[in-house]
Image (cartoon, rainbow, N blue to C red; front, side):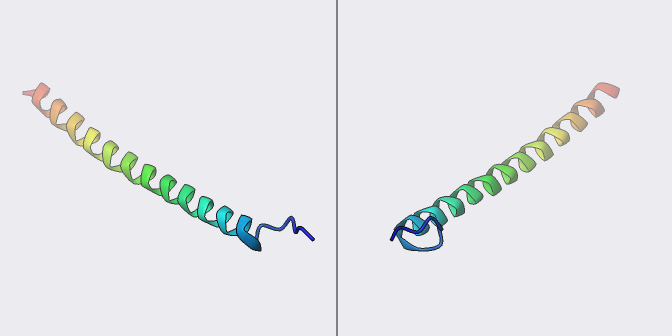
Length: 53
């Protein structure tokens, strides 16, 4: 009998792998966005300081 629960069988394993990969990509994108924003803010601060003098 086929179980609809994703916790058993090859479908459950594929579902778990897909979910872990998707979560990993989401964390990776978040880290890249944070790094990019920090660099952009630093660049804007340097430009503001250069414009004042």
